[in-house]
Length: 423
Image 1 (cartoon, helix red, strand yellow):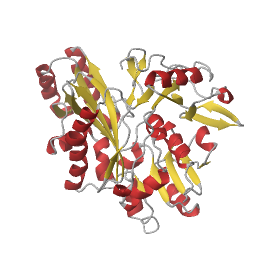
Image 2 (tube, rainbow, N blue to C red; image 1 turned 30 degrees about the vertical axis):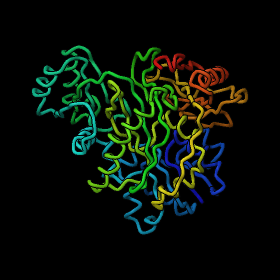
Image 3 (cartoon, rainbow, N blue to C red; image 1 turned 90 degrees about the vertical axis):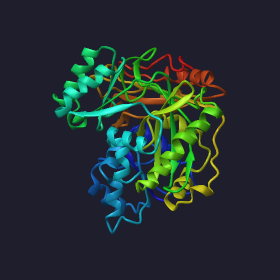
Image 4 (tube, rainbow, N blue to C red; image 1 turned 30 degrees about the horizontal axis):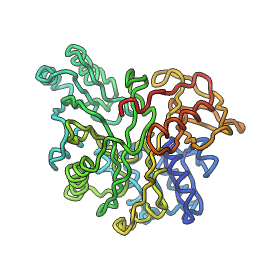
């Protein structure tokens, strides 16, 4: 089978690495890819939202399946583009159609979906520039901290949590009136703050059947002890030690089943990964958000734990035969630590040479923001590399991840040294 992955990050390199292990794979392409995918697949210099160029590549390279990594093309309707094109309509796309992708594309839409299907989540209200005064009044009715979320896609940076009421009012005005996040904050969702510990649950569905993939916990803040600005993720651990069988049973019954059934009831065709961001509050799960694709860096710990042939698994999604698959998961713990550019998540420099790959032992390096120039691997993004290792528990796995990340080097490289501190 010839397969094309859309995307350029650590998630896409991990998917490529796993697909390469399948005897069912013929040729693998990644658009646009990175230095890591270049080593195991053919990178195509095509943007993930350039649907016409994607079509040309699919036809010329005889692609038989497309896996969509990031949310942007899904929210922009890449799956629908395939279904509405006579040359492409029979090529399976892993990722939901546009209407279902609104679960990530609009926080307000996701909240309404949860309310409609009785899925536990935080109390909330939505506001626009016209209802700014009502927003102020709603903030006054809440206890701090205050949670403000830009409704649209803001590259993982559209959520602000503030302790001071006046700061929260100013932030609301900045988002709605001054368009702090552009069109993403035309509508802002304000919700009650939930106090607890977070985890992510991944579900793979073919629209009829589903499989619950391994749980993971990622670390979003740039600083040790979960301080500082939010990032796209500084590392992840799978499985989550506090997700007991009883707690997972609650997630299954209260969240996963109503989500999959809700998609059917609302006529939202969904073939692909559902990422459910959850928080454990007094031993009960509440949904924080949906993503309509795999998370990054959670992919770097979830996918390596799957023992199944990934091509076979995704073929079952395309054929709606996921119920026939017996999901096999490695019992060991996987951890990944993300190396980022100095200054990230604010301004940072690119094109720094990365060295030390040949020293890596008992770990896998997944490339995120890298590029290949004249045979050298250079940094090209804020989050640069993820180092994944296995262990009998998260402490043992983290020790290996850290031992190996220390062997890698680029100017101003930074990583968190305290992952797992809250477990």
